[in-house]
Length: 237
Ligand code: FES
Ligand code: FES
Image (cartoon, rainbow, N blue to C red):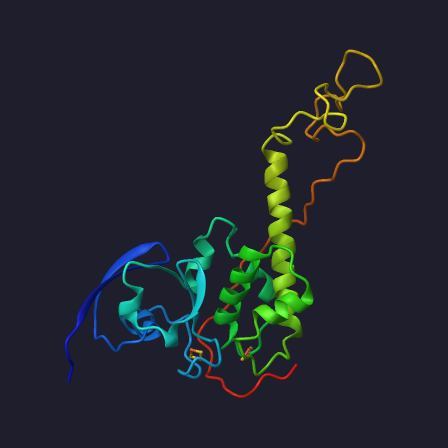
């Protein structure tokens, strides 16, 4: 038996959907049942476990605590959308981090952890361990003891920082001319008229104290966050 319904337009992972939902339908159920995006998990249905965490208009939301009708007009990001984000190279650095650092066992909490991790790194690109633990404190994991989840998010932070540094170098070494500390003159080799260069190579011009571009090699394909078995239980650090 169905009651009255409401038309809802929601953009999920960049695609706009028109849904007809009962007013009581939870966002997590609309995502999983109407859109068949089952990467978002249901662990408790009461706002305690964080398995259902998605981004709504850039904010992490436990989607079992929100009605689908409340998401009308919103942009939603689920774990399925991470591979299409600009910072992803195949996998998103967070997905890569969970693979590289063994940040999951059963994987039930993983989609929510990845979304929580993105929310943190969007706000704080270089978090310390305490800040990471605080950011995921609303997401429960019964398997890992959290240590490797923390490492996974640290891995992603390092990857994102490295790729941003590479992009800055690729942009031509920066738009600012190199100066001797704020003056209008370019740095020179001690008084000659020639600006200091490294001979036309690809390295950015520096005054001897610049930073090296960071590279750490490429990544490989894998999958993170497929449908695992259900979860429950308390976290245990
Ligand atoms: S299913 Fe939403 S917080 Fe647990
Ligand atoms: S890996 Fe976190 S609940 Fe199993």
